[in-house]
Length: 212
Image (tube, rainbow, N blue to C red; front, side):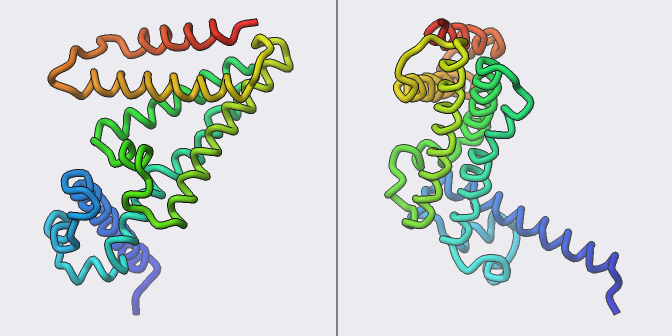
């Protein structure tokens, strides 16, 4: 009879194998794209038989859906955690943008599918998952919008159109993270030697534009 410890070890082993499959699939999707990714290639990369994949996933679509949820949707929904302990609108905005920049840099470090998902989500996503991605991005926008509105109401930020300001902030943040990632992980571009200094310069521009 299997004891609790044995069951726990077996479950841990199963979870580790699932993570190994997901990591292998992630690499295959990055290297070959969704259309050219094959279950047999994922199995070889994961070091298991093709039949083993079907013990965990029904097929390529389910693997891809889980990767998107764990690497894109869930992290974006968790961005709100970054502002919980912050009191001022400026501190909340800084914490939120820092968290998102870290997230985008993490994706870029792995040459993630994120850019393709963001720019052309119709290319390989189901309507249900596409809606989930859009919901997560809307969640981020509403967080930024709420912070901007709070800052304008308190007098911390100058009065204006909060929606326009939120759009501008998100656009600037995405552009900054993209350039930072390209200089950090490209052999053909000079790297930014001081990430913290670059971020401070970025925030200076953001808050100068918002200052009352």
